[in-house]
Image (cartoon, rainbow, N blue to C red; front, side, top):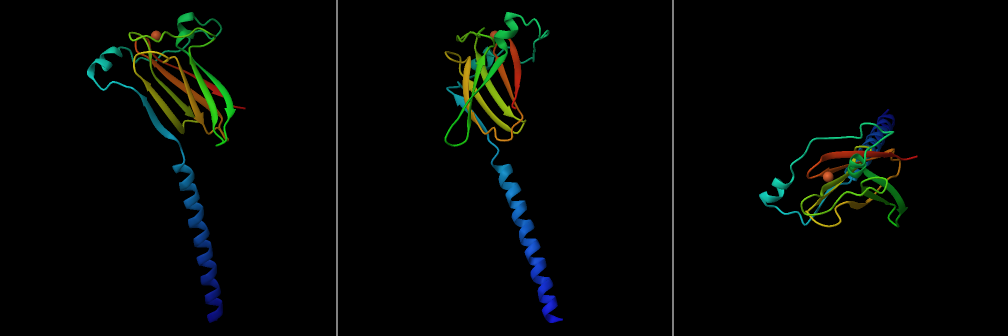
Length: 166
Ligand SMILES: [Fe+2]
């Protein structure tokens, strides 16, 4: 009987240890979610905030006939190669179909944000100036279903686009 109790105790401990290990692995997976913000020369003064005059959200009204204004503000998502770390290069152009948004101190793309299945987030905040109408990210797209990209134009508000991953 004593041996039997010992046997039961060993089984119980083994099951408990395996469960703890599985819980730890799940936690580790959650902790590996990328969530960071890259700030590129963002001024911290009030003048910067005053230049951003529109935070309303917009979208293309008629997908069959998007206007040049709508295309100019809609981010285009381009999937690139996978690097040695297993991360995929994702390029964003603002806007779409070759109609590129201005990038001047008075009118620029003040942020570019990407989400993968709403769990992986990276955000670039741009100071007024050059090259704000494009961005590059390296994302873990393993098992990913969709990439969402949201951008902000300081004058014309917030626009987004998504790309399904096969
Ligand atoms: Fe704009």
